[in-house]
Length: 443
Image (cartoon, rainbow, N blue to C red; front, side, top):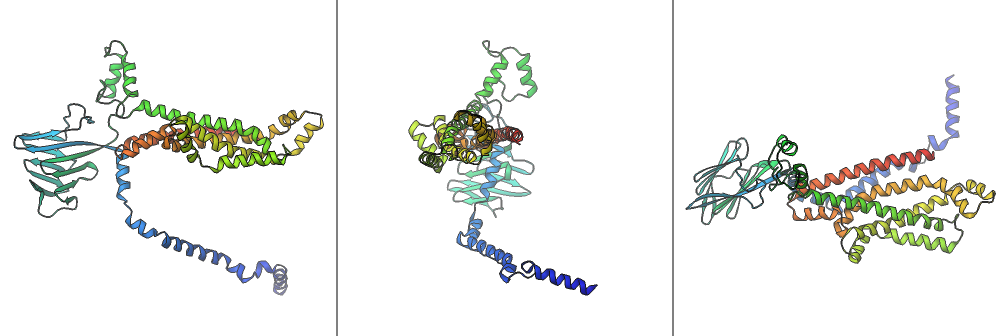
């Protein structure tokens, strides 16, 4: 029995030599591919100096940006003079016109600023005492600069005539001659609903609701509810009205540009399809026109039209329209060239006119695919409209770029990014649902 089995196995191996006894190159090909991949990665690591880039990267910037997205800083300046110690805040402070924070305590010339549990800064004349984590640092402020007494702890740095004390997320203090600059940080977004000029500012939700629904009119000419909405919409710190208006511009820009591209590319695709329009010259001219439109990136078109029409949504609509006309035209024409000719020939055999042949023999086959592609481009252009807006094409992209350029309003950047993400998510869900229904009907 074993002899018969061995004979059958030998015959089977002889019948399929490529499987049981492949050439040496074929046996070692996966190993060679793996080795080549590893060598290529090592070469890229060396050629692009990835190790050096990682070692010299300013990783602390990522922490700073992430912190600024979810928090805000209140800045104040403590000035010491023979006449006394004064505390000042910026003109448009998050604390309003008469700031009296509970983390600042002044008793004559003695000022104590609390940065959380076990973290404080005490200023007494020309002496500053910083405490953090059980450690204490004394700094004397002299005419030629701040002079730390003793060894500097790890959370303090000396640069020329300035000592910077770092209290972690809670903030920092810069000790320099004649003054101490405080930056106190808090989690959240300050004055997101009402700014400091609003009569509803710094009130609880219950107090605001009571003022809106049962309180006396703050302004006789307008209801409290309308006044509250006006204060939110025209919030000077967050500019909700302008942000939402620019967001709507971005949505309209994407929709109109995609719609125009769909309407123009549809008839041109019939001319470009060889089986629909049997004219070599017309086919090639239309296809090359599509190539010209889509070979130039949407961002470049946006720069061109911003120069031609000036900054605004018209430049963004034109950029989306030009780019998508070329791309959709190519996709549509290739779809038409791959249709089932039997349905078209059947309609033609009953004596239908050329127009009716396309209407009943071609359109039903390609319409779900065309609509699905248009919906996908509409959803994609909602994201792209934000990018081209940053170069002057209008919409929320331009406002986002303005906030990023200041390098101080990162909480405003986070606000707009979250709005963009929400809009993209909603439009993506709508597009996916509509495309699933269309393709389901087609199947």
